[in-house]
Length: 116
Image (cartoon, rainbow, N blue to C red; front, side, top):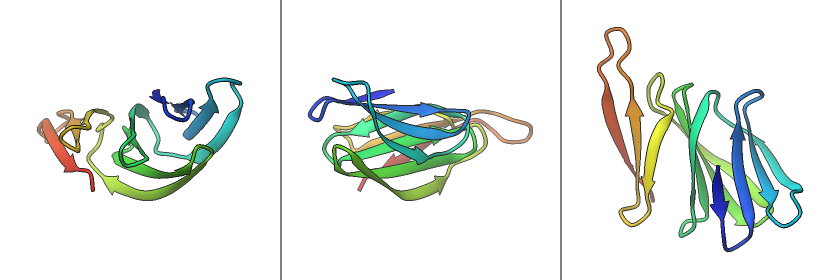
């Protein structure tokens, strides 16, 4: 989960079904519901860019753009690697880090994405 303090919105990702939900923190009402990546573990709200980044074990980062407190649009899906559901967003550096676990012949790695 993440919190958009300026607009009083709680952002949460559900695994089954794979949905991104945006809730009004004052009323608890769902204001947006969108498809997202499977196996979500981490998500981040980027207040400066008005974006949400969702990391999923399905091997993708899904990015949403916030056009108003109740309006969100999917803008991209980037492939990471199997199991890449854990990460860290560093707003000051405009970086999104994604940990890819070791699996079979795949070595563990850390991927760094620049937010633009």
